[in-house]
Every structure is written in C-alpha cells, then in structure tokens.
Image (cartoon, one colour):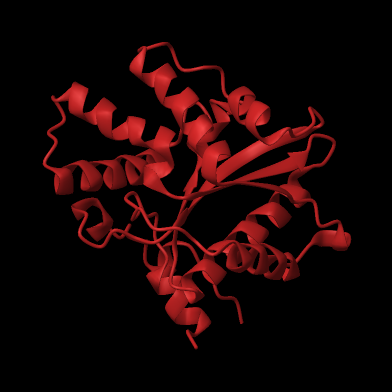
Length: 223
C-alpha cells in the first residue's frame, strides 16, 4: 500500500487525463473516506457534488461554448487571489505558469495559444469525474480550513488508488453554470472544482511538478 509520504510527493496538478472511466464505487469510497479529515468542532462543513457522464459533458460543453464565443469571463463567486498580490506570492504564481508554457513550447508573446491552453480548464483537462466543493455561506475562516483539509484528503486517497487530480479555482468564474448542473442551493458557495481521473503520462504538461520553497523559508522552530 502507498505510504502517505509517497502520496504527498506524487500528488500534482494533472492537466491531461486519459479517456478512461473511473469506477463509481471507488469514487464513493474516496469521498466517504476523506470525511475523516480534521474539522473544528466536528462541523464537517464540506458539501460535495460529483458530476460524471452526460451531466459532466453538458457542463463542459456549456463552459467551453462561453470560451469559444470569446465572451468576457463572468464575475467569480469570490476572489481566489487578493488584489494586489504581494510580490513574493505573485512571483511563485508566475513561475509555475511559465514552467507550464515552457514545457508546451508556448512563448509569452503567443497569446492565442496561451488562451487555448487556459481554455482546457473548461474541459477539466478531459477528466471523467468532476467534483465540486461547496461550503455554507454562513460559515467562516475555520470552516474553509476544514474544507481544504477535506480536499487534500480526497487528493491523497486518489493517489492511493492510482488516480490523478487537479484542483481548479477556475470554476469560481462559472459558479452559476455549475450550480445549474449540480442543483446546489444558493446558501452554498462554490469553493472550487476538482478534476479526477487517470493521468495521461505521455502528455508533456504532466512532466511539470511545481517547486516548493525550502523549509527555512516558511518554518520557525523555537526550543
């Protein structure tokens, strides 16, 4: 069985999935198992909607049509990144973006190809399973932490089962379209989408494994 450390090291944002179905019972067991994630006061605030088959295909079609029509991006459910973003964080964000485009051979000046790659978010990078995580609007920061720990648990369990994932803040722009697909009530806010499936290991973009800063840059030990 895969160790937790190995799952952590293996996990990455997969941006190209195989056209291969995922066993529905495995997905159910992962979603149930992840609910053992820590939760302040045991509130268990996560609300999870899973789309597959025709439901997911219809969502992808609707979102991709918006992109193909070159319509302006909708107003997001919330700001994923603060504006302005401090330089230290912005540099990290830009660095991973440049790594991805470098592997694909898309130069900075080729805006059309970069937009085309970005648009693949709308197809969840061909993933056969789309998980959408919601949280009650009445809740606060502590419960968002709980939701993050839940999603991390889902991703690690997917690794254990030989599957890949990609967490997508992208879907906050299309929260109304996603709500139509999921039927989630208005009292729930869409936090993110999570693409789940089997990695296309032949895709160059999946060679990218984002860097992490050294421990001394973020941890302080006091004795």
